[in-house]
Image 1 (tube, rainbow, N blue to C red):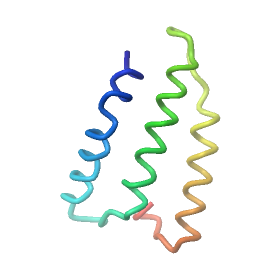
Image 2 (image 1 turned 60 degrees about the vertical axis):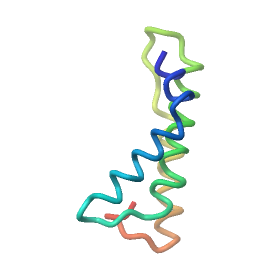
Image 3 (image 1 turned 180 degrees about the vertical axis):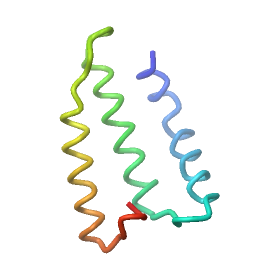
Image 4 (image 1 turned 90 degrees about the vertical axis):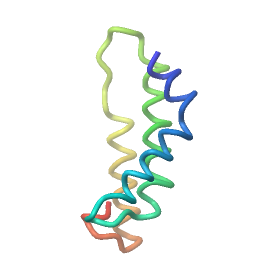
Length: 84
């Protein structure tokens, strides 16, 4: 059910995340934060929900590994900790 919601409303979720990031006082949003990070997170969450049988706990291994890699990419690109 949540997986279907994410799939159906992906563009609206990303747009809302962008609006919220634009509206915060500090830190300013980074391009990568919304344009790359949010869609990637939604894709991984949707995939995890699709592959995981209902009612069973899921491991965070895949999302954690990708989050670590994404954070390293942002650091290499010069983003500060507050921007990541």
